[in-house]
Length: 187
Image (cartoon, rainbow, N blue to C red; front, side):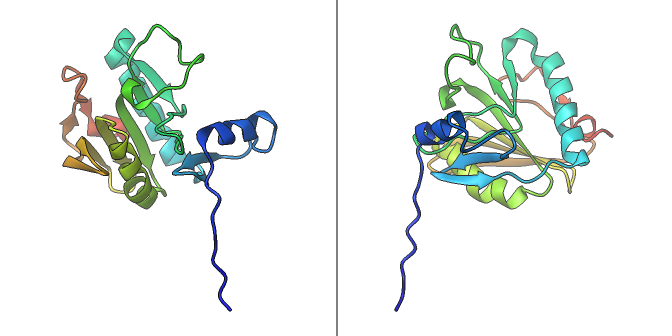
């Protein structure tokens, strides 16, 4: 006899409610991806250092033109609320503490990948593209490369470029901001 496995997918509202009533706590390093509660990989020193370098460069580079949002939730859809490493959000009249950040607010979304590269490419990338996130960077700590994904179409991005050591990259929303790849990886 075979038994079918039926998965129970959650909505963002149900997921948030689980945190409010204590089913999920701050000790649970999880995010909601396509209705599934997924455990996030532990953050090691190389990952943390790379996020810190990105934060420093972005805070100085964008100033008041964007909200630099570290590890903040983005409500992509009814069933997905990831917590990317760094996101640049549009400034808006309603503070992000009072209302969810949504795809229309995102100018640039960054995932730093040390041990999560396959998840960031195979699971998160289609979710971000499908939500219309205009620019998605995967910062590959192992290879010292920044993958820049632009022009979302369906569950893919039409343009992908890789920038390595010795090169610079600029966010689409801030072409005047040049990030040296070496600076992101702590040269």
